[in-house]
Image (tube, rainbow, N blue to C red; front, side, top):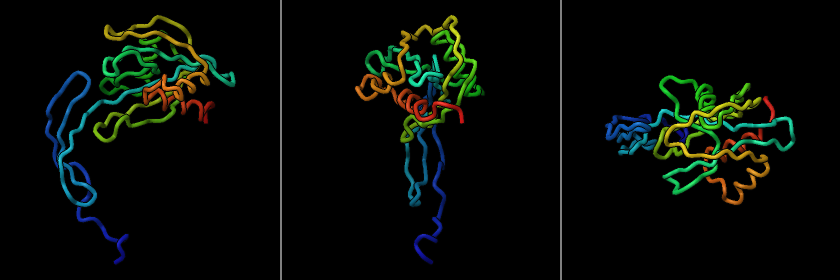
Amino acid sequence: MSEDQKTPASTPGKLSTRRIYTGKVLSLDVDRVRFPDGSTGELEMVRHPGASAIVPVLDKDKPDPEILLIRQYRYAAGGYVFEIPAGRLDDNEIPEDCARRELQEETGYLATRMRPLGTIYTTPGFTDERIHLFAGEGLTAGKEKREPDEFLELHPVLLSKALSMIREGEIIDGKTIAGLFLVQLNPEPE
């Protein structure tokens, strides 16, 4: 039998899990896992319910559309960070509904059309968090409903300016970078 025809003795995956911490936003587990070579070990895993993020597109019909960024205080980052609106999924919440809710809560805007852009893992080396990305179009202004710990400002910018902000190191948030590039790559629905 050739090397590429051999079947591994056992399938990689979780053997057991031990919960270390449960918090409001995340939980921490220590998982005993089998690796692809059959060996076993322990990995610390941050468990997260997932999130949705939305690129608010203010005028999609222009070659260089205006989008809406937020500049939000992030303690973990040591200051303010440019981002797209985002938030954690509630229990059994559909990702599109979460994106709509977060857009309204953080910016006041409502979207008549939500276009899925894709889903990303934030840091697959230690967390199962996935973020569902959307483009929000047909926006109408309304009243925001921010959480008490949300300190943010709205910043409308051209998409080309936002991409320049990535190159210049002004935008450093991963979900925002992914969302902006996906909007640039997929400006119209399929």
